[in-house]
Length: 369
Image 1 (cartoon, rainbow, N blue to C red):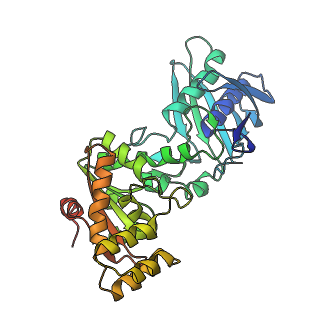
Image 2 (cartoon, one colour; image 1 turned 90 degrees about the vertical axis):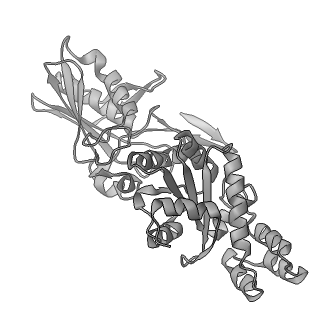
Image 3 (tube, one colour; image 1 turned 45 degrees about the vertical axis):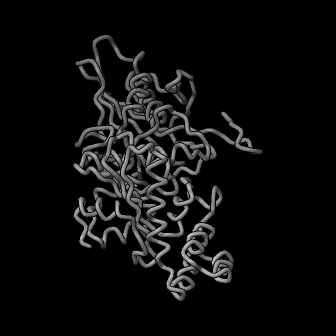
């Protein structure tokens, strides 16, 4: 299966959920004495695909099979892992799912599955159920154990440790298909962090672009369970936070990333919009900077480089002003459904400026300013 991305033709791949479904079907066939080299599995849209099996075996009680995941042209950390399924019949109808080696267990409330359950999401559970339904004898159910050799190591390169999924990867993928280079998939992977904030009892989330903001927020004593890594997707995470009826959020991070919000930029990757220097220079001019200084600000190579220029002219006050502007723009972006605090930091975590809303929301979260 292929799809066009600009001038390129790229291969779609299969999710760990669809691989688990195919492996489960292969395991049941092995258990029934009908081992196969490849099996059918069905996507959420009822599209039939054929996937090859490996390591088919049975001991009479359990059947087992594996599928090597092919993520297509998507840079997926689980590409090439083997998703294995063991299955045995139950005398009660329905499927019971368990986590084997390399598949995580949910340890925090707020995720798609309850605490203590295998991190096999509802979508993959439906795909697995669909894949084995026509093979089960009348009145029988199935116990399915999904494992991923090496999954615990792979999980360290995912959001699982932050989300409270321990012991391995999550089995994911509602549709069954991996879209290559999918920004939407990455954005969707960030959203469960908001549900964990709500489940932890917080009414304010701290939205952080990355490690710089995270470390600075920790040093202020903000609770880690209020943190949400948003990468460049400021607008998207603001909208998702508003959907969850939070009282407010604090945008907390390096000024070179977040000052763009003051200019109405809500996707902060530099290839989408890079208005850092222009935004700072405009506010500096409003506060009385000379034409020469404005020119030097615009010609600066790095966002961090403007600090010395502003400091020398006593104009670091541009950052509290820009924080106020960024907060207003962000609140307007979500139609006033959220209060939005903004905190700008340096690379070392020093706070350059914040708006009054950040002061109030931070106090609600118990920071130690």
